[in-house]
Length: 250
Ligand SMILES: O=C(CO)COP(=O)(O)O
Image 1 (cartoon, rainbow, N blue to C red):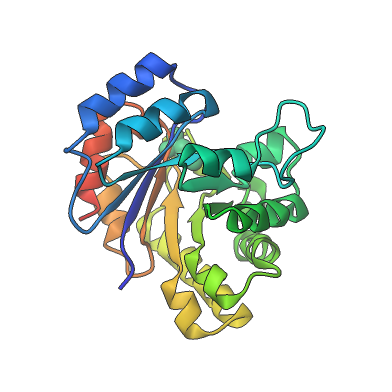
Image 2: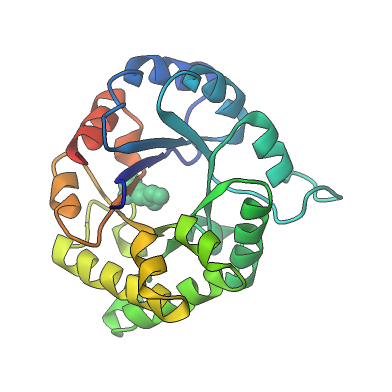
């Protein structure tokens, strides 16, 4: 049985005081039996959030990690540093990082390995652009990105990966994928993982949908048999809607 996982991706929003005020508002409420809750926050807010999350069931995640441990990489943050803070998850290969920061499939794979090296759980994002969907390339794109991300992982590591299927045209647009379309692609991604490993490994992997998930549509996605949660941007920024998202995942 896969445990549903709701992860907020705050992107480049919230100062330390805003983050701690948010956490105080959701503490106890965004903690629901049978649902894993994660907040993926900007680097600057992580120490305060990890501290605030002690004694709660809410896990804290980063939104990026460099693949090297240390070195002359001005502006970068490594897995050692995140682990040292007490961070549990890290988003890798978000489409915004692929598009604006030139993250290739190869870099994504290196980052996934870096996460495992330092005991961080990767949330790996895959998904197609609008023109790829229109050219009926959705599954092909997701297959290439998934196979690249998992390259070199053991079956035990693969089973720990959280995949987030985020069609790029649905991010921040209010145009969400239908739950049936999302289920179709996510079932396909699970099949790709089964092809790389075996059915038991693929059945252990949690796969989220992301892209304009809101309190009023989250349970529709969660009702699909292959969808194990959501990676949420905009609707994760307000305490009330974040709490409703977690409750909607029960
Ligand atoms: O990119 C996303 C989460 O990583 C989705 O963002 P929205 O929920 O704002 O569409």
